[in-house]
Each structure stands twice: as C-alpha cells, then as structure tokens.
Image (cartoon, rainbow, N blue to C red; front, side, top):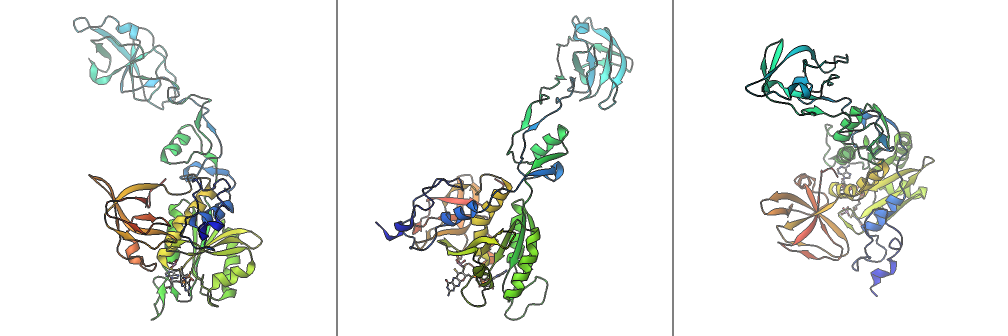
Amino acid sequence: MPAGDSTSGTSATQSSTSGLPQRPRPHSIAPGRLTVEDHLETILRGIGPLGAYDQPVVESLGLSLHEEVVSDIDLPRHDSADVDGYAVSSADLARANTSDPVELPIVGEIVAGSGKPFAISAGTCVSIMTGAPLPHGADAVVPMGDVEGDHQRVVFRRPASPGQRVRRQGEDVTAGSVVLPEGAVLGPREIGLLAAVGRSRVKARPRPRVVILSTGRELREPGEHLGHDSVYDGNSSMIAAAVRAAGAIAFRVGAVGDDPRQFQRVLSDQLVRADLVITTGGLGHSRRDVVRQVLGSLGTVQFHDVALEPGSDQGFGRVYDEQTPIITLPGDPVAAFVSFEVFVLPAIRRLMGRVPYRRPQVHAVLAQDIVSQPGHREYVRAVFEVTHRGAKVTPVEGRGAHLVGRLAQANALIVVGEDETALNLGDTVRTIVLDRSF
Ligand SMILES: Nc1nc2c(c(=O)[nH]1)N[C@H]1C(S)=C(S)[C@@H](COP(=O)(O)OP(=O)(O)OC[C@H]3O[C@@H](n4cnc5c(N)ncnc54)[C@H](O)[C@@H]3O)O[C@H]1N2
Ligand code: MOO
C-alpha cells in the first residue's frame, strides 16, 4: 500500500459536506499533508448557515429564501386587456363581416389604474388600455388598429372570438399557490416576482459580514508613500472585492502590521461585526509571523500544510468568546486569491445557505502544455474563451505566487490533479471559470 494511503478515509467514510463525491486520497500526497478536499471539508463542517430573518425584498439580491412564498393574489388580478383596443361582447360581433359591418357606440374609456369598476351593456363597447381590467359584460378585446371609427363609434368588420386578446385572471399566478420554494436564490426575476405579488419583506438568510485583515509590517495602504522595502496592501482590497462578489458584506480593516498585541486587539475589536474573519499573510514559522503566533497560542485555530499550489499554508478555527470562524490565507497575492476561491467562497456560500458551495468546473481544450509536480493540486491561472470550435483555455505565463499583474490577465483556473504531472496541448482539462454567478 502506498504510504500516502495511511491517512485516507478520515473524511471518505462520512458524507461529504462539500457536496462532491469523496475521492480516494491521491497517491502522490506526502503523509502529514492535508488534501484540498480534507481542508475544505473541515471548514464546511465548522461553519453552518446563518439564521434567517426578515429582509427587505429590494435588498435581497443573492440571498436564499427561508420560507415558502405563497401569493395572496391572482396575477393578472382580473381578466384584462392584452392590447390597446375596444372591449366588446363577442356575441355583438357574431355576424360582422366586410360587407355588413357592425357599428357599436363607445360608452367610455378604461385606463389601467383608474380605480373604478366598469360594465358595458349589450350593443356597446369601451375603449381599453393594455392591462386594464375588462368591464363586466365584455369577453373580448379588438385591437385598435383592426377597426375604423371615430371618438363616438367603432366599425367592426370581423367577428371576435370569446376570450380574444384577454389576459385571464390568475393565468400566471393563482392566489394561494407557492410562487417560490424555500431555498430559492433571489435573483432579479425572483425579486420582481416577490414585489409583483406584493411582498416588501421576506425571510431570508442574511449577507454574512466578513472582516478582512492583512498582516505584514511591509504593507502600506494604496495612495500612501511607499518606502524602499514596503509593498502596497493589494490583498485586503482584492479579498474584500471577492467577498462582495460572493454576495457577502466586506469590512476591510486593511493592514495591521505584525505586532502580536496590536493584531490581537484589532482582531478582538472586529469580532462584534464578524460572521467570518479572513486574514492574509503571517503564516510562516518565525517570530514575526503574527497570525500563526497569536492564533496558534489560542489553541482553537489549526494550521495545516495543504497539498495546494499556490497556497499551501492554511489555517482555520474559531476565536475568542464569540467563537467566530476565521480562515487564514497565505500572504502572496496569487496564493491568497486561489485559497479564497478554493476555501473561502464555499464557506461564504455555506453561511448564506447557497448551493452548490463550489464553482462548477467546465471542460475546455488546453491550448498549451502544462507540466506540474505531483503531490499537490495546482490551480493554474488561465484565459478561458469560447471560440467557434468550442471552449478553449490557455495558461497565463508564469506560475509564481507573487505574480499579481499576471493574475489580473486570467479569467479562469485550470485544475491540475494531485497525481498529474503533465497536461498536454489538445487535452480536455477541468477549468473553473471565474466571476460567473452560479
Ligand atoms: N522556510 C519556509 N518559507 C516559506 C515556506 C516554507 O514552507 N518554509 N512556505 C512558503 C509558502 S508556500 C507560503 S504560502 C508562505 C506563507 O507566507 P505568509 O502567509 O506568512 O505570507 P507573508 O510572508 O506574510 O507574505 C508573503 C509575500 O506576500 C506579500 N504580501 C503579504 N501580504 C500582502 C498584501 N496584503 N498585499 C500584497 N502583498 C502581500 C509579502 O510582502 C510577501 O512578499 O511562506 C513561504 N515561505
Ligand atoms: O503555497 Mo505558497 O501560497 O505557494 O506561496
């Protein structure tokens, strides 16, 4: 049995929180390393969906519904006109033809929203606007353009069939019926429907509040003066944007240096507003690596060597009395980004009660060879495009975890499996297309 198999099965024997079938532990992973799947599973098990409460419908984009929504009303609310024209009783026009037309007097005008119920008697018609309720006595609408006449009377040269150009009451939504099931994710169309049936608030899981801290005494806020050995804090802005794109609320604290007391103070101050804390950097083993230092000594956060490239240094746990979940990401920007995609995005989706947790993978034809070391799963930055010949993916030049400029050229990540050492031009490869809603 390969050495790597000795630690398999810890999560393989249990049902998968990540919703994917459990795969056997890849042979090439060194003992003691966690697989990406193991670490993700630990995070998803350690985080549950937030409790639902009443939310304004207008603010609910991307939230998941925590009630079954039943409409109190019919839509359309009444039989109503499907076109601007004349509401008639079809019986009155039964014998209308070109040589012997039927003339009806116009007894009024019904505009949508006029608020008054209306009725016509046999031998009359009324002018009606699209969406306005059909008057009692009428069962059809004849479009304005199909007839002649003036303001007083209309000449009909054709019969009308009962129900013609009429929108039936309740044909779309029936009062008492379920319009959205529990768990539905509220997009523009769902929000439109909720509003159309008169809901101003719904019970939904809220947006998670995510606090983002970056660590490192070399970090400077963009816009400030840059010393000769300092770097701009790109990570906290990048992660905050990714958090927002995931549908959560981002509180970007920015860089906190690497003084343990200051880090501890900022962290505990921030917990009141956090459902989740994300840090970047400070995961090394030196005295200066403040995240590992401070959180390691709390005993509630575990740090792991994860078989992930880039982004092998990872940590997860809960902190302080609040037991707030915290995910610690590596400092190198590409490592931080990839680990966000792999671990934090699913965690946010889980807090929101949204499935699937992970971005779907698509298949694309590889446009250039990739060589990879076995023993970890690599996410290779790439450009995905759909050409007339189908989906194609081209790696972006450079694989270093620091190449933030090249990261912005990519719109996809190619997944190179743990045991894979080469993907060749023309191969169909697993690709994660970034920035798409799912
Ligand atoms: N002796 C060893 N050294 C390292 C190992 C190892 O196993 N042994 N692993 C490497 C790997 S892999 C990783 S990942 C990193 C872990 O690093 P940290 O998470 O502690 O990251 P930092 O040292 O804080 O920063 C790394 C790099 O990224 C820059 N950085 C950090 N934060 C930001 C930010 N907010 N915006 C922009 N750039 C940032 C930072 O300046 C560094 O250049 O350890 C490796 N080393
Ligand atoms: O795993 Mo580290 O994040 O490559 O730089």
